[in-house]
Length: 192
Figure 1 (cartoon, rainbow, N blue to C red):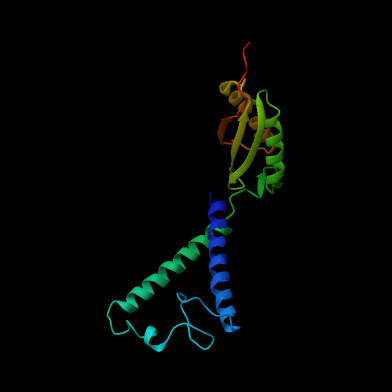
Figure 2 (figure 1 turned 180 degrees about the horizontal axis):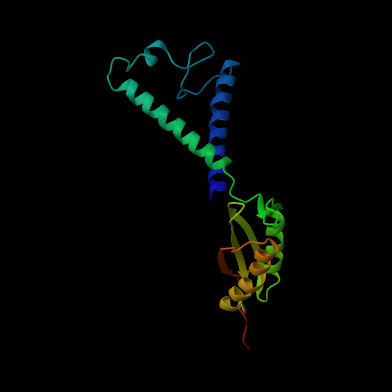
């Protein structure tokens, strides 16, 4: 969802900047603007002195401008932190028993977990990701089930095999998992 929102917001901002900047550049180069456009010609300014000072005497003007700019800055900061925040776990801390520990790449553990989950009977596709802290990771697994698959059996197999192997290989005391099951679409069978 966030990926879609990022693309839409960036696309709208880019389109707005290209349209406004391109039109100002075109008019500055001598293209005749349409009658409804915000400025009239090559030597016209975007905001006249009268436009800039129109509401200056009103008491609501400056608080409204400052509030709008503050909201814009807060939204931009929220968006920036949401984009920069890592969702996936980069590494998992493995207890080696010597007090130091070793680091296991999160993508490697995700790959193995995905491969084992995908090899289960009745699973058409699997995707696994690790979240949380490196000392206490959590797994998110998405499974696309074949039409003949039994969800309870698939979930039991995932817990007993793939998640148990991942937990044991990383030396974790527990590996909580959130599993999303989805049925694969299939064509209707014809009966003669």
